[in-house]
Every structure is written in C-alpha cells, then in structure tokens.
Image (cartoon, one colour):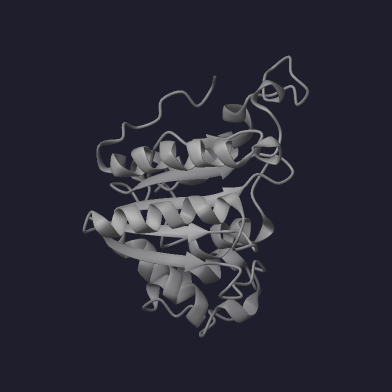
Length: 223
C-alpha cells in the first residue's frame, strides 16, 4: 500500500518526531511504499499566493479558480506544490504528524492544506464529501497536545473535547475532500511525560501503525 507521512514539527528530538520515526520504520518493515514530506526541513511555504502557479488564467486573481485552472492545464502548479500533489495522489493513506498549537495545527501544515488540497485536485464545485475528488483515500492525524486529557472536556479547562477541536480538520478538510477519516492517535500531557511515559506512547503508536491498513473509519466526530 502507498502511504504518505506529512510531518509538521521543527525539532528532530521532539515527541512528534519520534512518533513520525516509529511510523516510518514500522511501515517500511511492513513493505509499504512510503512517501514522506518534512515540511520544516524542506522549507515548505504556508503562504497561498499568485506565485503558486506556472500559468495564469488572466484577469482578476482568485486563488481557488487559479488552482482549478492549474489542475486543468496539467498540474501547472509551482514545483513545491506539484511535488506534494504527486505524493498525495499516489497515496492510499495519508498520516499527519503534528503538534496541537492554539487548538489547531501549525501554520506550515495549515498552509499545506491550503496549497495542496487544491480546487480541481482534492475538491471542486459539487465534488465534496461523498463526491470529493480524494474519495477512496484515508487520512489520519497523529497529534501531540501539551495539556492533560482532563483539560479536553466540555467542562474542562478548554471547554471542548479533542474531537470538537479537531472537527474543522476531520470534517471540514479530510471528509470535505472525500477522504475516509481514521481515528486520530492523540497524545495528551506531552509536557508532563517522563521517559517511561514517552516510551509507552511510542509502543502504543507502533501497534496502531502496524494495524493502520485495517483501522476502522472514525465515526465519533461529534463526541
């Protein structure tokens, strides 16, 4: 199976990096075709701008319509976007390794969503959700949160569950483009984990990755 790992952390010694490394080694040992995108190391830009296109439709600049035009013209996107789209389209499963920053993902990953999940590539007019252009693919978040799990409750410090916080990504991004949403692997209290705690997390993640191909779709988006 073809699997893409999109990694969005700047620090190689971070827990997010360790989780990514577990996925890489495990999937490689299982014989999967693995594609990797290290967004910080590659200098991937989060900015969606007119320089993202080799060709132009002319007239008033509308980013989404330029995306559709580039897709129709044979993927005439800037090289960094074309490379990512190529890996995306070649993959059956996409895993996003990311910290949780400000109740979302880092800007570099949000920019990946903006620039790579392009109109005409991942979705289009009338081609969303069950008709999305990425239907048949699956997406999973491996997300690292600094605070303890009890913070992520309706009556907790954050007054929202992690499912509620991730809803814009799970439903408004992955499902919107037609992808199956796999249950996220969420690490809580990353700032408070000792060495033994980190090792336990990595072992749990290795088991999850070993079974990612038969991982069920995630149906509890509204908990």
